[in-house]
Image (cartoon, rainbow, N blue to C red; front, side):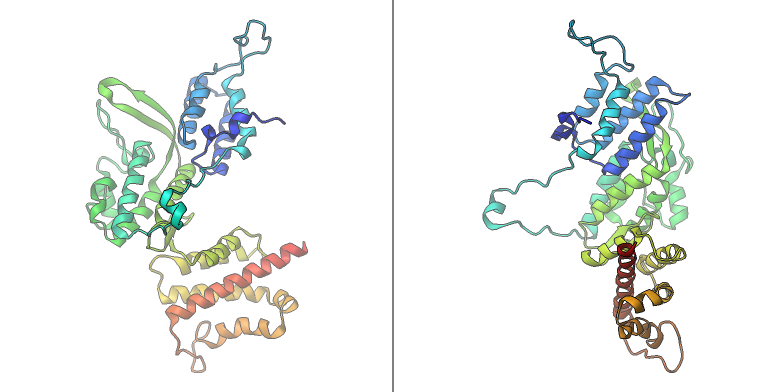
Length: 382
């Protein structure tokens, strides 16, 4: 298969991960052949995708220049090749997906080339709130909150899922006012305000699949047909870009709730464990529950203790594998900590004179690393 070289150019640089673009292209290509296919609506959905998923306007401009259906011939009177249609073009884009360029790191400036790169300062709560507000403002403009919060129109505003007063509904749910709209109130956010708003919006974000332009009195775009799954994915991507540059030590998980993050090398272990095919079927649910419970924002000591106990239970099911692959004394040590240090059992024999805020984290991630090791051993043997 020959891929057109133009798809490799910076004109087709993506702003979304390839896997999200792939899923959307598959959906659009599939619906283009469906019994209820409407050419104009389909083209509108394609245009919206191309505007959002790429950093330049060239992809959508190229798409718009094509006919909606394959018809006629090329502009050259001697050319007997039919002009490609928009559907053909989208299929070509799908085939070129793996070569579409991602944003490249910027080239270093003069002083950086002379003295080396400067460390990027992490942002405090106030700066993080401002960056979050800017991000949410862009997503509001893109229709991501129209489903829940409604939409303004010169002919009369549209109510969303939260009713005619979404700010009051948000106040009722979170117990605090002056939170919405985010760009208007973010300067006064406490840490709890920011975190609760992030999680609340994760529950109410939807990506619009279609839009229509209302030109009367310069009203602007109105959005319709919403995807909860795609909205949550894009929202999580954008929010985590903000959080990754902050000192808060938080990340937004797939379940729409904030988690504390470990140093990068340890965080890679968590990612690997979540993505791996586990040794026992029962491990999947217990592992995810333990990871979420331990890393949850505001997790109590008891929450963390229970999460460590759950991981010890996962390793108990792998005791034979651990004993076979590791030295027997190591196998025993894995469970000795949980059994003797006041974690799994609570009696007079347990050793409890330790700082749980420090040592529970160490034990937890040691167990995560061991689970990751056993996953890799099984994968290597299969």
